[in-house]
Image (tube, rainbow, N blue to C red; front, side, top):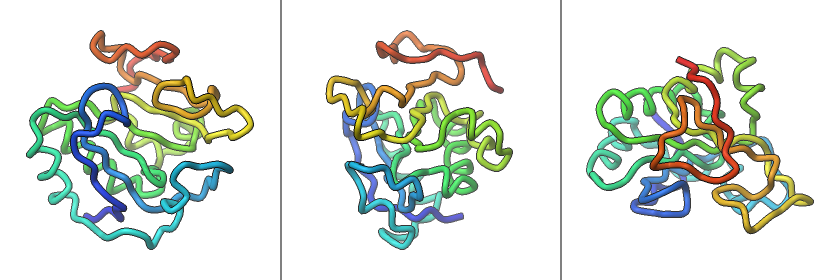
Length: 168
């Protein structure tokens, strides 16, 4: 299985707490005005990478957890679900994922919802330029929520997050 990847950034601290290996995917239809990464909207940008090769990069860094961003990983949901499942089954890493969809939109669509059990944190909702707030952690506007999908781990507590019941 393959994912269209713009880049993989290792040991970044911009995409969630602590060191992260961030997988930036190609393709997004949300086209948020003021998006900080509009080059990621192109579904043909970047290169195809095998899930096995991405997983090998993730596993090679024992210090970093994982972030999925883009683009929007939910536009490649089958492949990202496979990658997330393997990360959770083969490592102890946490996974944060950014999307322009809301949690409620994802839960209403069985195809999109298949990735949720494998994610630890979902940062949901479109970026709204008119609500831009540079003081927010890990998101650009306050409508975007940091949602712990399986309870709040004490080491990842971020002010303003939304704890939810376990979805599995």
